Image (cartoon, helix red, strand yellow):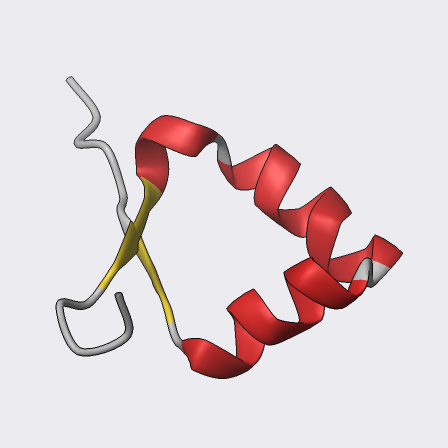
Length: 43
């Protein structure tokens, strides 16, 4: 059984997401919503 991998996104990734960076958005879609995390500080 393969373990799920969680990707911790930092501020720079989120800024690019909100700017509409198509490359970042595509990568985040590939990773999947359930596999993305942000730190308490970033939130």
